[in-house]
Image 1 (spheres, rainbow, N blue to C red):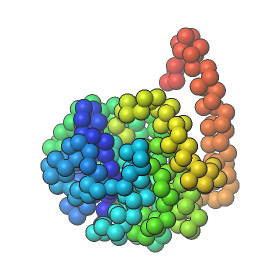
Image 2: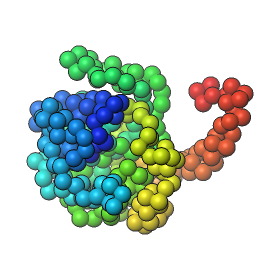
Image 3: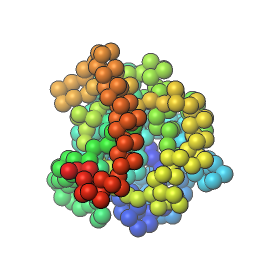
Image 4: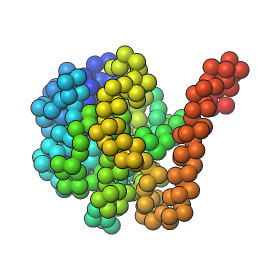
Length: 295
């Protein structure tokens, strides 16, 4: 079975709604699934009692107040009831397809890291979990919105106990690069890197970046983000889903050839280094001309 672990922002306003939604969706995966929530933010203890989660209030923090991801990973691997663990961001909705994917990968691979692309969608209200079709409806809405994030946005990591134990640098969560480091490190350790994007519809509930005065730009570029990059070992110690050497599909696990990985990586590099910067630089004039992204 599976232990999921995470940390959360204060349970206030919209963040409180989507975090409750996410945690409840995990709890409903299976009666044997364990969920551990780290941190002592406002409302965490009450939510853990309400949803029947394991609460671990003590976490190690940077002077800024942001939590160290290495502490959370080490404690989760020490405390978990199950040998298969998953760190997942506290705004991600998971359904039965996720648990089935975990079962299939663990049945075939001993040393692995499973991850996948997310689908972004707007969720503004508490989900009615008494509706037996809630997961199907949410996933259909997300796919219809057609906002699947690219391979740099990694929101869940499934692995066996011990893969990251006492190996993660003192990176802070709430800034970038720690997730990319996890992929790089797992690959260096010889773990099978399994991209489950084709088999799992992981739904990300959209939110703003109001917790940073500079918004999303600050999360990616401020001093803490640069500190994460330095501690990670620089750009050469960052991975993405383009590094996956296995793909999980509805019909099974397939190994990607070197050429397939090279071709995908080349497309990703072109998109990230050329296409996305071009879109950023021309956004104002495109909007003036009515050339929106979807069009």
